[in-house]
Image (cartoon, rainbow, N blue to C red; front, side, top):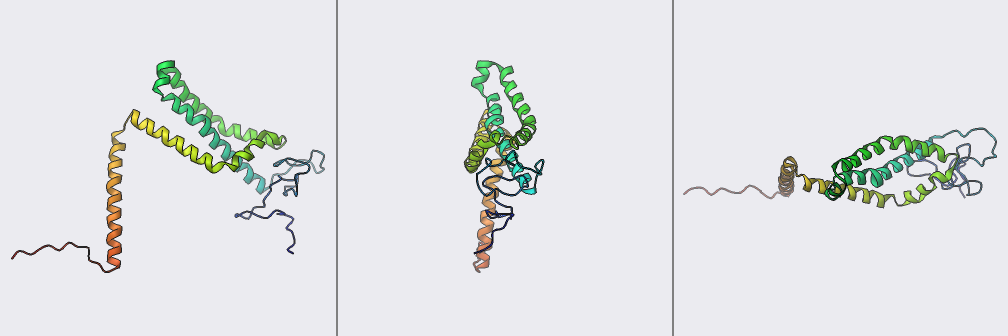
Length: 206
């Protein structure tokens, strides 16, 4: 039986980083069980050794948490606010000033989101419950990414139909011609590799 790696008792991920399903101890090593702390918590409160020292693994985890928090903020707050600012129905009901204010709100939230994410991550080091909900959200990350892309596409479609851009329209027609040319070139290249002539013979005058 292989000896357990004390630095990675639960194994390592594809990047070689130790897995930590139960969080970390004060020395930065993965916990062996759920006893003593919730996932992500550092120390038991009565552990000796002073303050917790962040390891490369914890920093990597914090970076992923921040990325997730910023993605959620963009999807749940920033994008909807920007969409509301372009809604003719809301403009008719609330007035242009208020719908314009939604766009400003989106910029404000986007500006302060990184600082807010950093603050939540620091808070979670002493109060794990502050970001405990993020663990369940992370499991659904692929679906959240799909939803975010869908929202962005919907927003782009609405904006395009509300205010069509002639340059974008011409770009679309150019893209179709490019795709056709690429397909023709690929067929010609494959035919040449197989020794099949692609030139159209021109009939000679009698």
